[in-house]
Image (cartoon, rainbow, N blue to C red; front, side, top):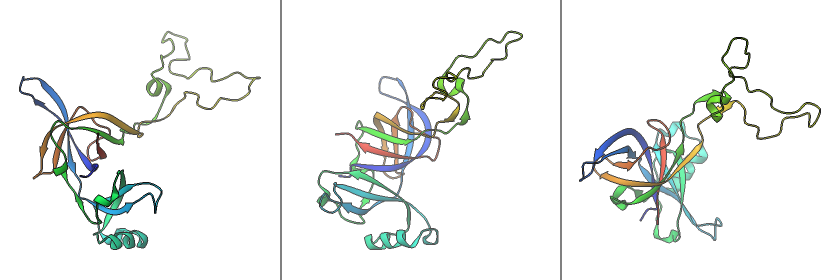
Amino acid sequence: MAPGIFVRKIGMTHIFDENGTNIPVTLVQAEECQISQIKTSKTDGYNAIQVAYGQTKSSKLSKPILGHLEKAGLPSFRSFGEFAVSDPTQYNLADTIDLTSFEIGQTVKVTGNSIGKGFTGNQKRHNFSRGPMTHGSKNHRLPGSIGAGSTPSRVYPGKKMAGQLGFKTTTIDNSTILYIDNDEKILALKGSLPGKEKNILKVIKKV
């Protein structure tokens, strides 16, 4: 059984359970995933399977990537990811990973990049409070003091200041599969998931 799969986020909707409870869900569609490399503790120092996904034209890939795919007997894939496994001998090169190994009610861990919001100020990035808005105040949304002058005469690393917000690797540790459509390769996962539409997510089954 495959330990996980790569999916593409479709969007959010809601469903009703048998009690009529409204449950928010995120719909994701499974990517075409095939095993491109089998790693063992003897050859690589750890046990894992490398999965290729995201088919593309061979002209868009470098020669080393094409050689790697050709060695595994695979078509042109542009992206790769790994899943840790306990027994890599159960898997073969070019095996296809699909949704047949998933079940409704199963708990999974979902990892992906959160939505990037660009360069933002202190108030939005760190939920700081603003300065007074009265007449004469010149500190409406300024950061204020960021350190002493003479000592230490510098700003300590890690100071909460303006900067890039979002686009960080985010993990939802406990999401439940509520619906599976093997024909359309669609999963419905409970709650919200990282990123915006068309974002690639890594879904791992929890033991």
